[in-house]
Length: 146
Image: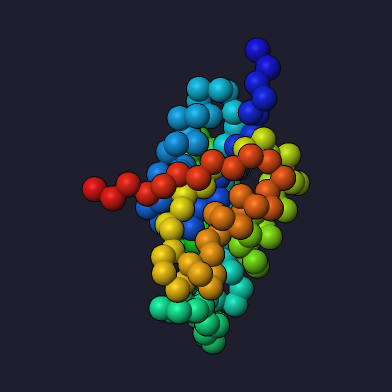
């Protein structure tokens, strides 16, 4: 049986909402027979999120290497049962949409934290920008705090 969803891209920032999206994608993928492809994008240079805006911080080489090692470890912990797990550097939205195009993804499943207030007004959300620019449908999974 052919399915119209053969490849599911799951971007992750290792947050609880992203982990919930991964579990949703695993369930959906198993149901429709789709392969899962995990992607982590680390914004370069490192960003620190403030109350109103994101500002660039100067990272030491050791901090940079530590952050890269933690990102690789985070991917490794989540990659069981996935067809691929990739790590890229750069603009988050641009990398997600470009990777989805290269992969030929049929669907993107991603978590959303939902910035609020001034941060949302000024920055929007990564999920919102991906929904607007993705080459395929996007399912956003809202975090359900216990």
